Amino acid sequence: MKLSQLLISSLALAAAGAHQIPPRQAWSLNNLHLSPGTRIFSSTDPNFQTETTQRYTSHDAPTYLQSVKPALESDVQKIVAYAAQRRIPFLATGGGHGFATTFGRLRNGLEIDLSGFNNISIDAAANTMTVGGAVVMGDLFAPLYNAGKEMPTGSASCVGLLGAALGGGVGRLNGLHGLIVDSLLSVRMVTGTGRLVTASRTQNSDLFWGVRGAGFNYGIVTSATFRVYNYTNGGQAMNADFLFPLNNTAQVVQYFHSMQATLPAELALILQTGYQQALGGQYLVVNAVYHGPQALGMPLIQPLIAAGPSRQSIGMVAYKDLLSASFFGMSGDTGPCTRNAKRDVYGLGLRTIDAPTMESHIANLTALFATRPEFRESVFFIEAFPTQAVRAVPDGATAYPHRDINAHLLFNYGYTNGSQLPDLDAFATNARRQFAATSGFGGVQTYVNYGHGDEGPVPLYGSRKLGRLRELKRTWDPLGLFGFNIPFY
Image (cartoon, rainbow, N blue to C red; front, top):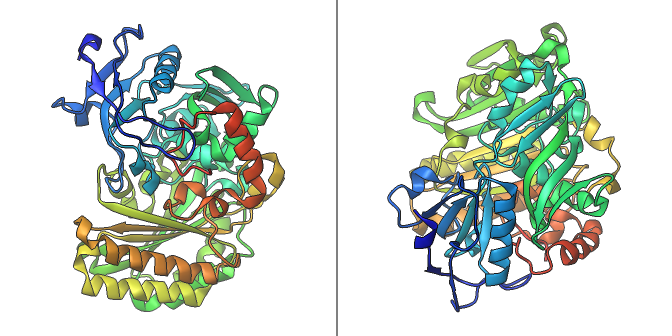
């Protein structure tokens, strides 16, 4: 579509807090002198869904009148400045994997699709990697492996690296290298003032503090530079997958409980339960990854072997193939990487893995799947990642507030139509409340990227961080342009 064809009505974006007021002026991008490589699509175009980045979930999704795919940083600047001037609600999209319900507050706005910012540059000698704003986890592994490097990443190939990093970034290598954000060296960001700035420990260090844990509240990151590390154990890790019958739940849960205080920095555990007819109905799967020799990893997973899995697979896997190999190869580009799925997602952080609560929840899921087959696309995860390198970073060094979380829960509920949501949300909030009561925190504490959107700012950002975060907001985004991804005001 030509720029001269663009003239549409918009909803206005108010300053921090309210996100909609009635339409009051038209907006057009045809006078912005955007670069020739920039592409613009209307939501009425027949190729809108195929040409623009689609979301993981359609639940409480934002709606757009236009999507613009800028080619240059200067295009992003012009678009943000124009949107601020015209009070156009907008959202930048990288991997498209955010699922908070607060995204749904954006109605009839503008999507800034960063898919053109997909460059990856590795300086092996300097141990650095620079990436564009749309790079996803799956883009990283082969280039890093070929350079003899690794870095902490998430557990799904389609999740945006920067989207994860700006909230903290949890994953299997947290024990060795910390959070993803702990490896962040600098960002180039278009802020709410329309300026393109660099933030690092030496430039705009106040902003850099806020970027590391709450970065999506301040601007659009067009590129970022990370520290990378020589790969562990020659780039090979032990991957072990176990499928258990449900009557072995107690032994499996007890293993997770027993390991929480002694989990080595090299060992990461994920439990998953859901429903698949091909697996006989409800299944219980554990993935264990040991970043080291198999001879050292095997004793650590011996209790899982002794628990009597109905199926198991244990072997060494190259770092670059780890995500596609885990969970018997079921976690590749299906499931977490589908698009526009009906997914209602909740999360919670635990200091303590309470075995009775875990067993009770798995039993409740069994009953749910039996009585409500429309919810059988639901999947529950517990991610028990090592925290040694996470805890080695002082709490005050970054905005990330959850260095004392030992395990993350992800409740990924599937449904078939919106009329089912009251029942589903009632089940979900009750499950979260039960886990929160035995979490060791005395209430809800949630990693912001796993937030549902109803928690409020304190459980997500931490009361001790909020004052400084809000002061930075007044400086770097005084109009509240960036307020749809679980804002803290």
